[in-house]
Each structure stands twice: as C-alpha cells, then as structure tokens.
Image (cartoon, rainbow, N blue to C red):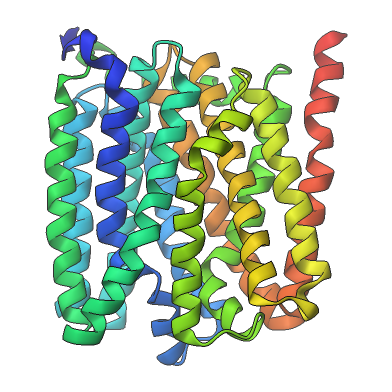
Length: 400
C-alpha cells in the first residue's frame, strides 16, 4: 500500500478540483453548445441527435467502474490529466476528421470514456480528502461548469465567427491540455494505491456491494429522487438550443446568449443559493432541489405557449438551481455514507449523470419529435414530483 500526496493540502480539494473542472469545461463548451445546431443543419433528426449523445454518455456510464478500479493502481490526479488529453484529442479530431461519420461516432465513444476517467478520478480524490466538508466541496465542483458555461459560448461564438469551427476546435484542444496540467498538479492531495487489492474481479465485487449500499433504507429515497431530477434535466439538455428557437421563439444568436446569460446569472447568485440550500444535511438539499426543479419544470410546460424570453429565462434559472442543489446533495450524501470506499463511491456517483443523459436523450428525442416540447416538460416535471415521495417512503421504512 502506498500513500501519495500531502494530507495537509486536503483543505483545498474543492477549490483545486473546481479549477480543473472549470478549465476542462471551458475548453469543451467553446464548441459544445453549437453541436446540436450543427447536427441539425447537417440533416439529423431530433431522435438522431439524441442517439449521438447516447454514444457519448453510455460509454461514460459504463467506463466509470473501470476508472474507479484503475484509481487503485494510479493516483487519480494523473488519471484526470490523461482524461483531459483525451478531450483535447477529441477536439483536434473534430477539426481534422469530421467528414467521416464512422470516425465521428467513434470519437463520441472516446469522449465518453475520457469523461468517465476525469469525473471518477476527481470525485474519488474529493471523497478521500473532503474532511467533513463534502457538500461545500462538491458545490464548488459542480458550479465550475456554470462558470464555464457563462463565458465559453460567447468566446466560442467570436472564434467561430471570425476564424471558423476548425479554429474553435484547436483553441479547445489547447485549453484541455492546460486543464490536464492543473489536474496533474493535484497529485499533492492524499491518496492510497493498493496493488494487492487491484484484482478486477475483487473490485467488481466491491463495486456491486457499494451499489447495493446506495439502496439502503437510509439513502435510497434520496438517490431515487436525485436520479429523477437528472433524468428530467437530461431529457431537454441535448435539444435546448433548438428548444429556445422553436419553443420560445428566439433567433439562433439569441439562443446562444440566453444559455450564456443563464449560466452567468447562476454564477453571480451561486453564493446566495449555496447559503440557502446547504443545511449540513445533504438529504435535505436533494429534497429541496427536487421540489424546486419539479415545480419550475411543470410551470415551464404549462405556460410554454405564453412564455416571453424573460419568463423563460427566470424559469430556466430556477430549474438550474434545483438541479444544482440536488446534484450537490447526492454527491455529498454518497461521499459521507461511502467514504470508506472512495474509488467505488466515485465510480457509482459518476454513473448517475451519464446514465440519465444517455437514457433521457433517446426518450426526449422521441417525445419531442412525436408530441412536442410541452409534453416533454410536463412528463418530466410530473416525474420529479412523484419521485419526491421516495425519500418519505424510505424514511418510513427506516423507522420500522
């Protein structure tokens, strides 16, 4: 067994992970916002666009347990750095090899695996070094994506407008390499590798046991609710720029600025949301986030035909706040309950988001194409409100 890193640096794990996450997402979001518009312009249907996202997120969900296993052999900081290079390679491939459909699909799978390695590695490192501040650390980590989304799309729009998509992809690759440098710098954080426990079969058994622990009476209801919120968010995510154009009536440029401004506004109010939402009880954060996300999604669906851009902006901001609180609470809850198994817990936590997106993207594409955006919002909002009963049922089971 080998211990690497300085345990005194663990107080800054949330900050360091957030900086690495921000840099990687800034590089990726320079072009990712426009990807659905690009695919639609190329003749893909909404259902086909959903399947493209499926090719990214299903490998991410399936690759998370493998990434968790490898953290027993390699320091997570080095794995996260390698994953950032994978993102950079993907961006370069889109710049120079985007004409071959088979190659594009293959690179989606490679991107999904890179994401699995990055998020599993950093989550494992955060679980190991959180020292009782998991909810705060994960709130920094998740909010980094909003910070990136506030600035990267605008920067990407300027680059694409002045220099074309190829330049945007190359700038993205350079930023992803920088994120890799930041990730490698996190090797100073404490971590134990244990080659004697590195048998794949042994890890698979341990991971299965950890997954079973997440279905315990104490946390199963919160996990179910958090997954419902992820499904609801993810069902609209791949088509959101298209939704703003056809559902809300915005022009393409307005849709791009809408997404950037929602993220910027959320970043500004981040500390307000954090102060109100973080109670030191992650389960309560999941419930509060679920209620906010459910009500705002239903309101979005009910009033969609009459929405102005300003009201749509407010509702999307509130939906983001609900999802943020739910995600933060889920990760903190798993970190606290499964702290003795950081590799397995990180892999399990990483599975949630991509699995939800992979399933919801296909489902969302079918519903939108067949019944429209309003129907999708009403279905997903109702799903969250029904799932709010899960923590109450689990609480009663625990009291028996």
